[in-house]
Image 1 (tube, helix red, strand yellow):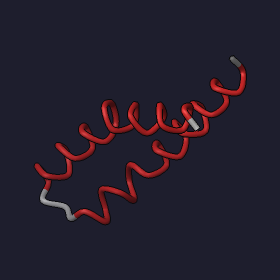
Image 2 (tube, rainbow, N blue to C red):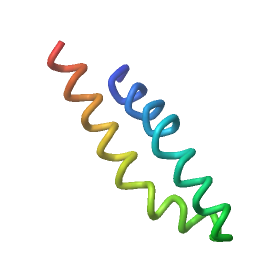
Image 3 (cartoon, rainbow, N blue to C red):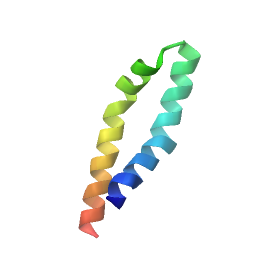
Length: 55
């Protein structure tokens, strides 16, 4: 579970804010932001879970 939490925080720090800044500048709404950044969230959560299981 700690790996999934790490993936969430990494997504929030690296991808979430970058996508939010771009979408705010372009004037897009929230569902489009999540649609564009959601695959990165899933990928980072899975990577965090794999690294947690590997340790």
